Length: 198
Length: 198
View 1: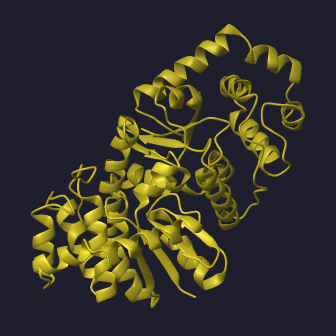
View 2: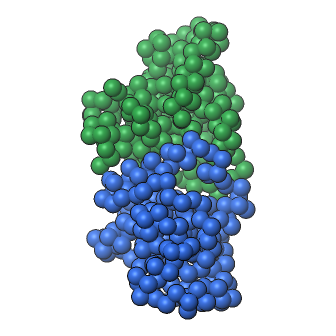
View 3: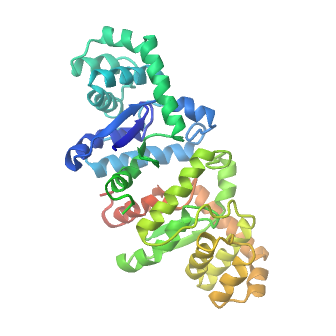
């Protein structure tokens, strides 16, 4: 058993999780399995629209992310560009990256450029500069990310998330237990270790 | 300066906060000002509908409350009756109770009966048994809770919350800073003490 980490590049709170998770994985010795999915597809199906046309809730979301990033020891320049124009491309690159073994590097760097430099993930210059920074070939990666095989895998991973009743990201599953939100990382770890939240 | 605590009886996550807050107030020495408001009015205005017609999100909410209650050291029998039929009466009693000095007792007992015994707050038998338990006269309290003066105070407190950009409860304000959610109690305390979230 491991902790499954479900996310979409495009989710704002996922910035907090992907930025702090590598260190958490190191200090706890727990390997999270990172699963990029299309949470947009799921949320549209469920009529779950957390921020669009909700200025008060959106304002708090940005401020909360800024405060919590500082708590965790890194910066967030908010508001970051939102929503992403190239949401699906950003995530299909992640699906391809997972199969190639450089998913964590890609996700953390593209989020850093999005939330610290203000360049939207999935768009230029973020995508090409992220790939260059982590030593990947932009043209080849985009070709693969647009292939039918990667699209099929993306849909299949999204179906798996849907079957687990995931309704938002970041989410974590430990066996049958579902935890939603960056602020539930610690609860998921607790459940993984002790079978309860302490 | 103090920490303002904004809530509505009817909010599910507020169960966690009102049940653990008296102990937090004691151990930290920080007095929270408890402000009952009509979050339903605000959320309808903002088209903020977090749970209705969202079965996956609702299922997680109940399970999350159950797990977190156990973490905090008390029980939650979930799902509790929801939504409340007598939402406004439950909160107008709270507004009256605040002026009379027995707000904390009323709120914590009515929530305990709602989330542990399964009796909806604001309805019978919860309301009369809560008032009896805390030594208040049911008929007199309901008469006062239905008075124009209490209704006006209830609307005025809701207006104050609206002017603070509150969009959900439980919420906390420290000066200009807004924190939303039971899981932000510790951030609000941190801000109150240090002017930052640590």
